Image 1 (cartoon, rainbow, N blue to C red):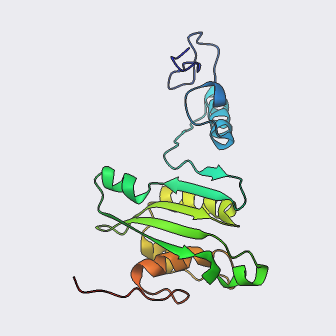
Image 2 (image 1 turned 120 degrees about the vertical axis):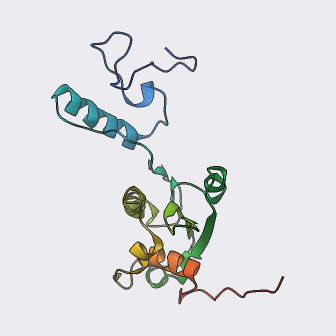
Image 3 (image 1 turned 180 degrees about the horizontal axis):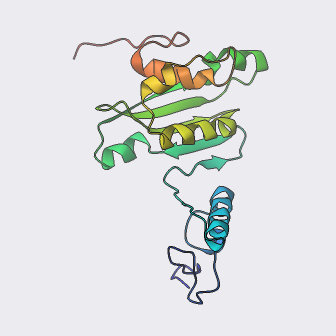
Length: 186
């Protein structure tokens, strides 16, 4: 056992009794079902002598509240702490056409980007559709997507997915459903 009461495991999820493996909430790490499922599949592949990888760099945190909340990757403060020159922007979901149709207009979507490379570092959302978009957030972070990778493709209209496009267009000054940022003289 560890000091916090979890079962100690090695990189192969073996306990101190090597033929007994442990995964999920009983070992150290966030108590998330997505993590336990991935660990279970990884262990099954290992037991079948198949190649497998278990990486939780971009583990989505989902809060099934009303409205739902999802966070994946770094916040702007965390990115700065890790040495990135980061910037972030948000898009109010009330500017999304699909939200107007459904009447579920509350919430925001936020994206954190590395200024030097335009690589997306984190994606966060509060509002209806956040859980469904979390898979897209994870995929974009896993593929080391840049702003252009999100702003170039066509999006179904109207759709919640357009919020992802709009938040990155807001960062580049091309969002059409938010007022433009006014530059002030210092």
